[in-house]
Structures are given as C-alpha cells and as structure tokens.
Image (cartoon, rainbow, N blue to C red):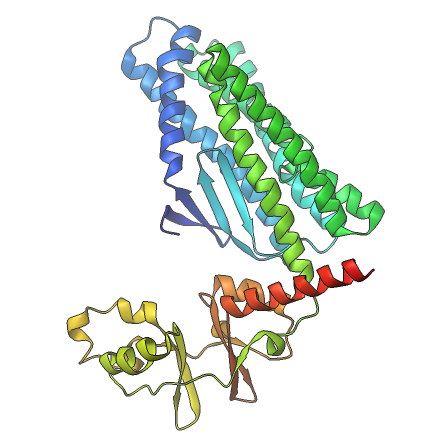
Length: 379
C-alpha cells in the first residue's frame, strides 16, 4: 500500500503503519505531555513530560497492536488468511482475506481483542498499585495509570454492539448461530453499527455547535464506522454471491501469450499498447514460463527497453500464481490478492487454460448479483 509503511512481521503477519498514524501519535503525545501529565504530576521539566508522553504513546500503540494480533492469531489458528495488520489514525485493523467459517470461529476471533485489552489494562492497573505501594514517583505512576485506563476504555468501546466493531462481530456470531444465515446476521449487525455511527456523528456535531471542539473526534470516528459498516456488509454479499463459482467459469480462456525472448520495447509496442491488456502469460514453444505485467515493465527505465527482454522482468512460474480451473473462486481469491498481485495463470496438466484477473472476478460478481436480483423479483 502506497499510504503505508512496512515495519516488520510478527508470527508471520505483516505489520504496517498507515501514514495517518503519525498524526494521531503526535496528537496523543502532545495531549499527554502538554496537558494530562503536567496536571497529574506538576513540577517536572518539559523534557520529562515529553519523555513520559512519548513512552506512554508507544506503549499504547503497542497495546493496540497486541489487540489486533490476538484477532489475527485466532484467525490463523482456524486457517483464515491474514493480509496483515495496519496501525492508523483510529487505532488498528486486522485485514482478513476471508470470512470466518462458522459463528463459533467468528465469536472467538471477535472476543479475543477486547479480552486482550482488558487483560493489558488490568496488568497496568495492578502495576500502578504495586508501584504506589513501593512509593514510586509520578514519572512512573502517571503513565502506567493512564495506560490501564485507556486499555480498559478501548476494550469497552470495541465491545459496543455495532459491526464491524468487535462487539458487532460478537452480535453477528449470535444472530448467525440462531438464524443460520450469515447475510441476514451481517445486515442486522451492520444496522446496529450504522445506528452507533449516527450517534457518534450527532455527538460530534453537537460538540462543534456548542464549541466543544474535543468532541469533533466523535464526528470523524462515526463517519469511519458508518463507511466500515456498509463496506463490511457488501463484502459478505459479494462473497456469498461467488460461492460455488469455479475458476474455470470466471477466467478469460485462451489468452494471448508472449515470448520470453522479445525485447520490452517490442512487448510494449506489439502487446501492451496494441491490446491494452496489463498482463500476459509468457510461453516458449507452448511451455508456460511465467507471467509479465505492465507494472514490471514500468519498473525498468525506458532507455533500457531495447536491451531488456521479457524473461528478464517476468514473474517465473510458481504455485503462487497458478490456479486449477476446477478450484472454487472463493478459495483462490486470497491467493489472487495476497500472492499473485491480482493475476493468476489457470493451468491443468501443465497446459495453459486461461488467465484469472481481478476484472474477471468483478465481471462474474456482477453477473451473479444480477441473477440473484432476478430470482428475488421472480419469487
């Protein structure tokens, strides 16, 4: 993601910082070091307050990361692919590439985050009382008490019954369990999420009108929750619409292929510009060698296009970019998005059958949704 910075992996899960995180980190650090800690522990130097604010902010976001990691660890234990964890302006998000297989898995994934925050909060509160008994100073006690408080608040907020908050996912798992209908459960839980979002937006608007600018955050948070609730519902609708569709039904059959020996200049002139496709299977005497995309060509300076050949920049054939035509589309989608950069070669017995792209998936999705709409109207 262009708007995010990769910082490493934990348990094989990629961790990234959205650039908006630096905004909230700065604001929290400023609020702690310039307002809260001077009030809680007067008489210290500005440098000390700043150090307290930086350390407390880092530990807070470490707590947020732990919260999201617990979601992801539980998801991975049930075989759900995780695209990664992103820390951003309003906390963090675990990016699931698929929906849970059952209400029980949904419940366990959802509850893991708030329970981890409650546990962290309880630990910080306990450390505060131990430190107080040991007569430790406010430089230590003030950040520890705030970290205990903020983690408990984080847990309580996430337990609110509005999808896609953790509490909303717990609600969805319960409705799903009793109705057996994931789509209906998501629609109801998303409705609660929208109601909660409108409540937060109203609180933010009231703050602006009354001059309490501090409530403006609720307006922004409510807007993001509103968009997330709708997007979460649509994601489930799309996934259910694609159930039962195979890769062979979605792929583009008999795609135009390209030789590994031609230059990048000829590839651009005779293929990418001519057909306006952004990816081509690379074959040599009928044998599949890999795939080349226009993005890989753009990564080479234009002055070198006459010297570089397709084989120099293509992605070699590997299991990451290959799908079987009989495979279910919903099972292949995580690999298509995570490992294949949105394009896969469809092969059977070593022979090229077609190519699967994100555009193919969108086309099939629209067709399936039109069928569903026609069936509902006929019924």
